[in-house]
Length: 183
Image 1: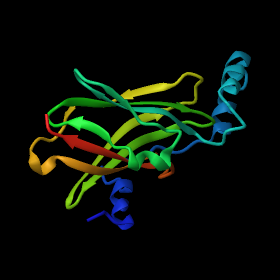
Image 2 (image 1 turned 45 degrees about the vertical axis):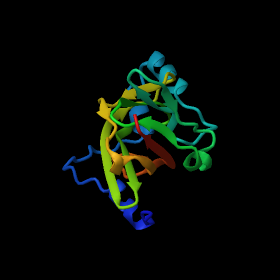
Image 3 (image 1 turned 90 degrees about the horizontal axis):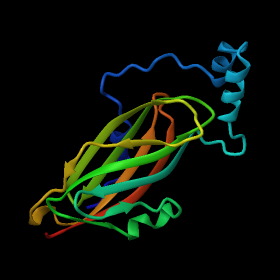
């Protein structure tokens, strides 16, 4: 049984008690240090006017301890569901996200992931933090986790990933797949 679109509301539900700070526009922040010419040049170098996105995901990797690193192909988001990442039950792994922030500060960047297999469902949410625009990419690494073990957990899983922020802006959403295999 596949999860319905309505079930994806729990990915965006931020019921963790966190209260977002007051939002400031990039223009307001630029004007704060208007008298510092070198700081103004630096701030202007962070702006890329031909790409309107504030958040640019460069790569998302599943790094398996003592095993391969699986990089999700972000050039073909539509085809990800048909090419599951194979993971061995009981293996240790972590997720690593490499991304750029441009144009404005992203306050309270969050990553949410819903994983489903028939009636099994798991929703994981994590706060990545707040990030200012810069020319070099940021890298975020999750804590180590363990792939579920046992016959019940083996098989194909559908995964929906979404990156949002304190303003509840959805920066990127995509679907992909995992296949847990016997060790």
